[in-house]
Image: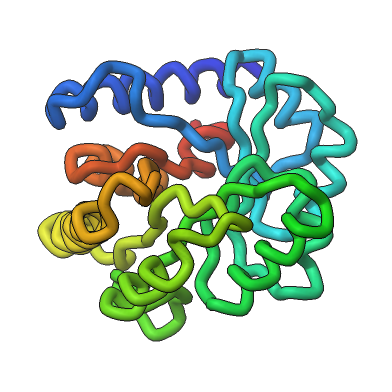
Amino acid sequence: MDFLARNLGKIREQIAAAESRAGVVAGSVKLCAVSKTVDHDVIALMHACGQKVFAENRPQALRDKAALLQHADIHWHFIGTLQTNKIKYVYQVADLVHSIDRRDLLDQFAAWFRKTGRKCPVLLEVHISGEETKQGFDCAEVLKVIEEYRESPDLDIRGMMGMAPFVADENIVRASFRRLRDLFEQSRARQGPAYHAVELSMGMSGDFTIAIEEGATIVRIGTALFAKGE
């Protein structure tokens, strides 16, 4: 599947160009390959091309694929809606959960740490798109949540995640990402050095270069990596 290597090379070039435009250190933006539409054998091929970070949006799929691909250098992320009764499939496998959108999930993650001794890093999902179907804390609420939970010894809050609206107007997309970046920086300034948030997960196949220009540290790309194209 040579197209996987070509796709990965093209995406890496685009990321590097966006990093240059943004004035950030080359190689600092992490590429998260969204593998939710492909089987584990395709993930193995993409891993052989050099990709190390993969993301799933269904708890059982994450559990099953991770069990089949036990490479020491694969890092698994979870990006989907998470119900409390499915945390058991995610907590022991994921290296980062992007989609914490409710306080009860934070409480459950803290409880799982006390039960297992393993601390699973999380991002707080923020609703920035204006679309009613999207999940996440609103901008004012997420600052309160950080204030409440930032000193918990049982949690590792690494930053924020958000999705721009699916619109053709680049200015609207850019403004959404900028709003999240500003909120992220505001949270860091308010909480001080005790708050160790460093990750801003935003940008997908259609808008990841804009996201990098606006401060993304992680981009989540599926279609542009795994599609065969023409």
